[in-house]
Length: 77
Image (cartoon, rainbow, N blue to C red; front, side, top):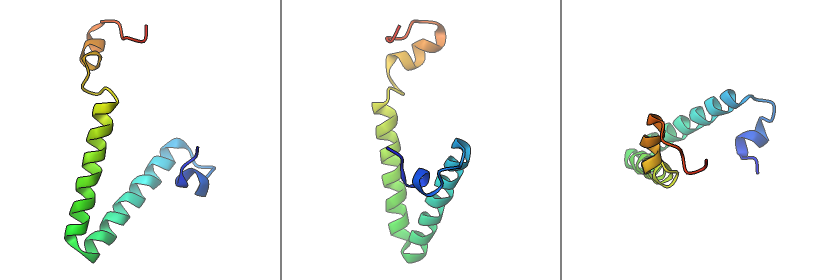
């Protein structure tokens, strides 16, 4: 299912969509900071928490994250 960036800008390449997403994220952070700095810090903390959760749940710290680099077979083979 396409996200809001894909629906608003269907002809952008992947790299351009990533750039637009980062610009929107930074702009929202700036608006929150202008409204109330602690709201921006809370949003940034939530963003970091979600990133950490997705990185850990996605296997970024699992045994095959480091063993795969040294030539050990991944569990998908």
